[in-house]
Length: 502
Image (cartoon, rainbow, N blue to C red):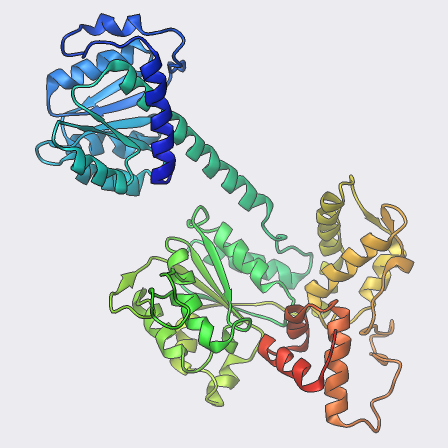
C-alpha cells in the first residue's frame, strides 16, 4: 500500500483511539487493562489469526503477547531477526502479521524486514521503535513496513494497527488468488486434436515441459505457436510465475531493444522515467519471443549475450541485472536458410534451437478440425452467454473442404463470424463464409478468386493481396501480416505505398 494510503489508514485509527477512553501505558498497568477497552472500538474477532512478535527484550515480548492473546490472537515469539526468519521458513503462510523491533542482536528489524518482504510479500510487518528511533522507523516503512508503533505504547493503539495490518495482508492474499484464477480463465485454448501430428506434439510437450532448456516452435502463421508456448509454460515448474510474450515482428526495430531490456530515465528522448523490460518482467517465469526471425540483425548479438548467462543491462545503464527465466521462441520462417543468407545469426540459432517442436499446417491435419471447432464453439458460447453452440454435419464438411491458408487463426475467425450471424445456437453450412481457399473434394485446389491474375502486374497483385487480406481480417494489420507471412512493418509500408484505406 502506498505511503499516503497507509498514513490515511493509521490517521483514521488514531482518530478512533482518541474518541475512546484513554488507557495508561502497559508498563504501568497490568495485562488486565486491555479487558477494559471501550466496547465500541472495533477489535479483531477472528481467533485463528497468528502473530509473530520479534523483540530481544523478553519483558516487551511477554507484554505484547499478553495484549494480543487476550484479544484472541495466537502468538509466537522470537528474540531476533535470525530466529524470526527460521520460524517463517516453513510456516509463513500460517502468520497474519509480524511485529519487529528495530534494534536486536545478530539481526535487527530493518534487515529482517527486507528479507521477509522479498520472500513473503503479503505478510505485513509492524515496526516497534524506541524513543528517538522515529527516523529509522520511517526508513523501514520505505522498505515495505506497514507502519510503526513507538515504545511505550497503548494497548488499543497496538491492537488497532495489528488489526489493520492483518486486514491488509488478507486483502493482498485474496488479490493474488483472484489474479491466479483470472489468469487461468483467460488462457488461450489448449493445443488439441486427433491427428497423429498433434499427438506427437503433445507428447513432445510432456517430455520437455519440465526442462529449462530453450525451445524453438516452428510452424506456419496461425497454427497455434503462442498457444503451444503457453501450454509449455503451464506444464512447467514455472507455471505460477509470469509468462511474458513479445512479438519481434510487431515492434519497430528502434523500440524492440527498449521493450526487451528496459531503460533508465533520460536514456533517450522521451524516457521521462525508468522502465523495466519484458526480460525483467519475466524473472522466474517464461519469456516468449514470438516471430524471432524478424528480430533485427543488429539486436541479435545482444540477445545472444543475454541468453548465454541471463545477464543484461537496461538502456542507459552500466549496471548488470541477472534474471532466472526460460526462453521459448517461435517462427514461421526457415531460420536455417536465413542463416545461410546471412539474415539470421547462426550462433543465435543454435542457442535457441536446443529443443525444437514443429507444428504442421491445419491442411495437413484435417482430423483436428472437429475437436478444434468444438473447443472454439465452447469458448464462443461462454462469450455469448448461451449454454452451447452446435454445428451441423454439412457445415463441418464445408470446413473440411477448405485449404486453410490462415490455419487455426482463420478457423477461429470463421467460427466467430458464423456464430455471430447464425439465427440460433446451431451453425449450418449457410452460416459458414469461407472466402478464398476452398478446394474440391478430390483434393485439387480450385481458383481462389473469381478474377484471373492474367495480365496484372506484380504490383497490382501485391496491392490486391494486401486489400483482400485486410478485408478478410476486418482491418486487423497484425492478423493480415500473419496470413501474408510478412512482418507487421511490411504491411504498414505497403498500406502507405498503395494508399490503402481498409
